[in-house]
Length: 294
Image (cartoon, rainbow, N blue to C red):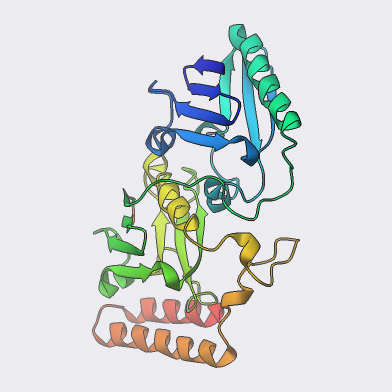
């Protein structure tokens, strides 16, 4: 057993699995503590390095592309402190960190683990049900459907549409951008009907606009990951270009469907305008955004 225990967490390798447990210190981000322990099978690991620094070093593990729904859902946009595959190491534990990294590298070599992308997720993602309250509302996922309950501070367009319920079978993908504290983020649920009709997050009834506490809004990545783990793996999608073009070819609506979706969205906006929910200015701005999306 190769193990290193630090304030930020513990990494333990038993020859087949790297078990990553977040620390309990108050400096450990809420996201890491909430995501909990991660068991990484050796076949999911592409490499590991220890990067020594003057005051504190860093263990950094790289996973094979496509192995982890968390990395796919967040797209490399997790803050460094919230990344479970990085561990800050005190200077006096540098030797232990080097030993752990070497043991994992040796096992990768002996087991001849390939570094090419995987065709299935090798990690399960967070368990369900999962629910997160964000600045724009509460989003829940029970394994079969997503539910969004808007907050009192959500845009009137969203509150007027009521709770949004989306079946996992209707989803094409989940788009996530964290709230950095300087710029707003969003959690968007892309369905077959909304692939080409993306409103600004603050007005999109299929998106949460993340503008409040960056620390708490980061938890929406839990929902994004839980859903991503239950969607078809990227390698199974047709029409995917190696240059990472949008992986939506299998779910792209036909031109006739585009027209139907456009008419339906405009009709919904018209009803909200007639009912007095949208002002003339809000109606004009939202209508223009819908037309631009198509």
